[in-house]
Length: 313
Image (cartoon, rainbow, N blue to C red; front, side, top):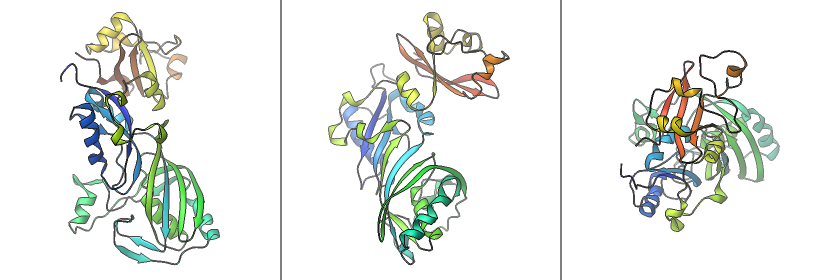
C-alpha cells in the first residue's frame, strides 16, 4: 500500500435508486482511491446512512458491521410483492387492517424474534447471494434466524400506508418485518420506502451527500469512533506502542496497556477482580496518545490476540 494512500472513515448519505456499491463510486472519485468499502448494505430502493471505510481502514469492516441500526420506513398494506419492496411484482393481496388491528400486532415483534430474510437479499446460500438465485428462477429456501428489535413505533397510519420507526440489531430485514407485521394483522404488505437514520451512535444528519464529498470528509480512526461503535479503548505508551505497531508477541505487552484514566488492562492469565472487570470485553481498540490508532485486539478462547494491526509499517 502507498504510504500516502488515504485511510479512514466517513459517513455517506446514500440516495434512492442506486445500489450501496454504486454509491462508493463517489467516494472513490473524491478520495482518488479504489480501496473503499461500506459496512452494511442498503437496498437499491432505500436511502440513508452508509458507514464507509477507506485504505487500511477497510479491514476494520467486521467491527463496524455489527452495529445496531435505526430505520424509518413506509409500509403499504394490502399487497405483498415478491421482493417485499416497490420494485417487485405483487404475489398476494389482503384486507387493509384497521389501526386497532395493526397496533395489536406490533408487540409480537418487539424483543428477540425469529425472522426469515427475504428471498431477494444479500444472504448467501451455498456461496451465492439469495437474490441472484431468486432472479435466476431458483426456488430459494431461507432459514429463520434470531434478530433483536429494541424499539418499534407506529409513527402514523393513513390506510393503506403506515410510517414506522425501528431500532434493531445487525441482520434485521425491515422488509421481512413489514411482511410479518401484516400477516399478524391479517393482511399482506411490502415496504415502499426505507431510510437508515442511524448506525451505532452515528446519525444520518452528520452524513455527507455524494455531490459534496471531498477529502475533508474522511476522518482518521479515533478512540471516539471506537466508543461510538460500543467498543472498549485502551492506550499504549512509548516502546509498547512501537512493539504493537510491529505486531510483536502480544502476551508480554498486555500488562502495559491501560484503559483511559489509568485503570489496568490485565493479561488473560490473571485471576480475581481484575479479570471480572473485563469479562464482558471481547474487543478493544489500542491507541497511542501521540500516533493515534494502533491495532484491534480480540479475545478468543480466553486469550487476547491481534485482530488487526492498523499501524504496521
